[in-house]
Image (cartoon, rainbow, N blue to C red; front, side, top):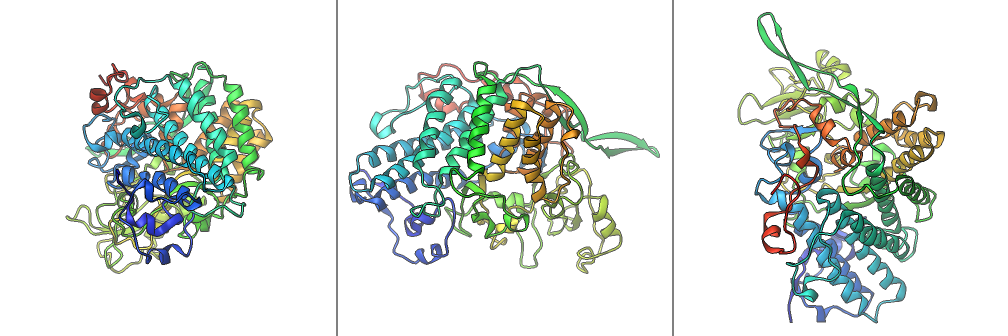
Length: 588
């Protein structure tokens, strides 16, 4: 009988990993005897056996996607507000989506591996007679959710894609399956799967709900996001969106020396395009569905979820709160379940608490200037000073960001923490962000139990309750806006972060409130895999990227062409799947 390897740590952790809420019993369970291999015939015909099949599906996100550090690069790097070291951004961050490395193929291969494992689990669970009816339904619902989530990510990134109703074990082949139009992928796969899943999966208030699993609100919230994506993408091309953007710097001759002068972002109005493949959707109907689903989640139809206080949201305990509807859990130092992205987003610390040169991914000045100085998301959410252990003098020493406002005043006055005696040459900064100076977020470093390790326990969120709240704001505005209801939902998120609340009379029309909500999303979900896809769905990706003038301040290429609207299908897929005869435009 064919053996299916399940990583021993997953079986030892039982239901606590790899997603959802970690419980205090997880570490104790690690002490239990692990199993290296298990065959389908050895899985019990019971609730526990059904759970094992579902855990095997979740497991793909670690072992098939995040394990080698390819993720979350395909999700995060290609947008206007993120930057960093050129070597870090040489592929997705510079528009090089067909570079030939594992990074460029990770989204395609990872999501289809997840779909295959979900199909396999569905077939096995459906054939079980031992599980209770409710638990069997819940397990199937989770598999439907994971399949739909994978198809959603694939459709956004690649457009028309193949779909698979059974696993490769049943079909015997994945090599002769044509691409399906993106409209059919939504209507025949994503929406039906999530529509079933939201009524099958346990709510987080149900007694049978087990921390470590997605809940009913996860499915309802994702479906709301799906409809919002369809609604924005199909909104007529005459509609406008305002983005604060512009070239990152200009060169001025000062006292005979060409000097780089960093700019402030300028509010720029873009006319949107209808996204290819979404033309036949009815944007109003899509937004009506998004509004109703988001409202139901907020009103408690699918369990109890809330916006967590900012001071707890990104802590080790906060990452297990009800705000995180779907996120990648991780284990500190574990070779399979410790994440690598923390190295570049947070930096690794030495025994002195100094950060090394792995800290290379951050937010640009134009993003930082979206905020008021008092907003917790930059006041507390940005790493304002650090001591870097560099391999040469240009990288080492005391550093701070930004080089203006209260933080610059604190440096000048040598107020704590800028009075550190270890910094003998003085603190230094580059306000626009060279390769070593950006607004580095603290949202992940606050979660990490040991930042000296290579593999850290930083969780990556795929869907938060805050997203659902802003989807309601967006849908209310698109349907009837600008409205007080939409502004109230926007303010719910702003209030949590100590930002000044918006007033309805500040919005003259639907476009102005639409733009404020999109801007709020850029602030709230920085480095959470959302910005590129928001620009894509609103049909302003090319305008927003090219508004930077070709390069960012760290010399990463930001110029984009039509071909960058979609990722290229991997070469291996083109060679093996005989039903796919052409790649996405510009990638042949």
